[in-house]
Image 1 (cartoon, rainbow, N blue to C red):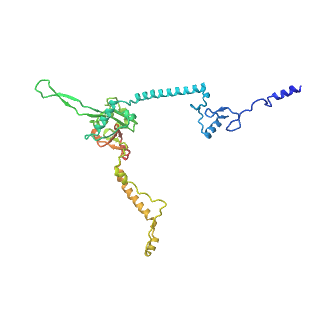
Image 2: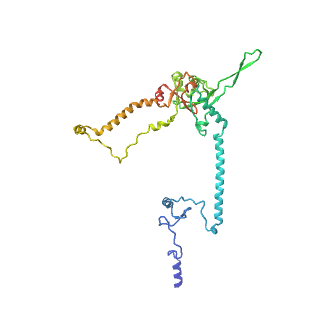
Length: 356
C-alpha cells in the first residue's frame, strides 16, 4: 500500500514530476516560447518580443537562401532541394524581367528609328534662320515626348500648267515645307484643354481661336465647352505662350569672376591701425565699429535698386502672342518644350498671366 501511494504521488500532475520544464522566451524570460525566428532560430513568446528581437539584433526574420554547409557530410537532400529551388526562382525572375521589358518597349514605343529621324528633322527646322525657335526635346520615354505629334511636312512637288509649246505639258514646282505642330489650348476658366494635333505653322492664331468659339473645328463642336469665352468674344481674349524655365549656360571665365572672395579664418584676428592722438576723441565718439555694416547695408540697398532691372531681364513664364500673326511668327525667338502650350485668358485674368 505504501509503495502504490508513493508511485501515485510521484506521477500526479500537480507536482509535474517527470515532465520537461517549459522553455522560456529568450527575449522577456517570462513566458513559454511559441515562435522561432527563421533566420537565427531565436525562440520568442509573442509578436511584441519578435519586434523587440528584430530591433535589438537587426535580424531580418527571413530564412537565409544560401548558407555554408560544412563538413561535406552535412550536405543533405534538404540542402540540395533548397539550392535547387533558389536557382529555379532566379531563372523565373530573369525570364519575367525580360518579358516585362519587351512589353514595356512595345507600350512605350522606344525603338522607332523613323520617329527619331522625324524629331531630329523637326529640331533642325526650328533652329533654321527663318524660324529661330529654340526647341527642347525630352527623352523619348517620357509621356510628353511620346504624345508629341509635331512633324515637318514636306511640301513635295505640285504640278501646274507649264509654258511649253506642246499641249498637255506640265511643269513641276516644289512647295515649301512647313511644321505641323501639336498645340495644347488651355482654357483655365472652364478647366478645358483642347488639343490640335496637326496645326500648320502658317495658320493665324486669332483665326484658330475663332474656330473653337464658332464650332468650326474639324474634330467636333467645342462652343458648349467654352461658354465664358464665347460671351466675351475672340477680340477681348488674349493668348499666352508658356515659356519653360531654361538655365543659360555659363561662360568659362564667368564662373571664376563671380566667385566671392574667401572670408578670413576665425583664427586670424583683424588688424586695426592706431589713430593719432588728436583724433582719439572723435574716433571714440563716432560709431566706427558700425561702419562696415553701414557699407554693407548701402551695398544691399544699391543691389535692391538694381534688382527690378535684373528681374525684368529674367525670362517670364508667359508671353503674350499677337493674334493677327501666324503661329510661326509668334514662335520666333521663343522657347518650346516638345510642342507649344497656349493659354487663353479672359480680360479679368490678364494680370495673372502678365505678372507671371
